[in-house]
Image (cartoon, rainbow, N blue to C red):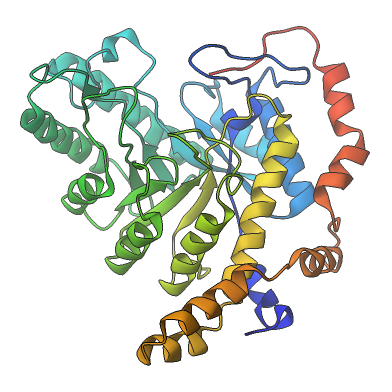
Length: 386
């Protein structure tokens, strides 16, 4: 098995994009909880995202959600982010919180509403131009609740037409990333329920259309790492939304419920070339911190990804291949498990310290006083929330 020193250079380029909405108030369908220190503006969200990067060195970009993060001047916002040491990353569209989208957005049977949804995405592309963002991420709430409610085939045709109109407005260095989700808010069918549907739709668009894989958007027992391998195999894995699920789309801290799954996913990412610095695969979080404090929740999340990446890099690929070729079932499995069970936390702490970062970012943040400061300073105004 490789040593930590041998795999350490591969950790240098790791970057995990954090979501602006993780710093706002969130909750469940039953309650959105407020908490002291919650940002009241996009700039305060950026301050918090930059704090995560300052303590971890892992989060150089923050994703925005439109219209949640709408401002009058995105050029000014981009410069503000740069002054805090981070960049604006993916621009996420939203066609699920307007009454007009009750029966869908890009798939709606009414061409007027459908065009409204298309125009929203064109606005997002304009924002991408102002922020220097590469990716437009589209997740659709479109679907139906009852058999016979909607014509499933026609909705796929309308989706293809809408996506084509959006894709046509991208510049040569911009990408469309289509996300899928098996259910919710629609419960009979979702218009983009799985990776196969997303793949079919983006393949019809062109090279700059790819699939986003949210680790919480699958049916129970789905082999997510197999999907990763397949999408990498055909060059269509554009990005991840990392979180953790126990029952459904729980959006909890990545690796919290099943760290072994995160390890398996990252092994396939590395195996398929998706971890290379020039792979184009974006590693992102999509999480909501409902009962825990938000900034340490994000710090814990990016550290979990880093730790499991290190463990996945420790897999002895040569020994694994030999055991697989020999039909040595348990030998191959042991090679895999030896890497997973390797405790790399002390090595990572020393590696961080050698780069001027705190060895224990969680403890360093707790001792920094930043949490107490924002709780004292951010009084009054309206806390941001989805």
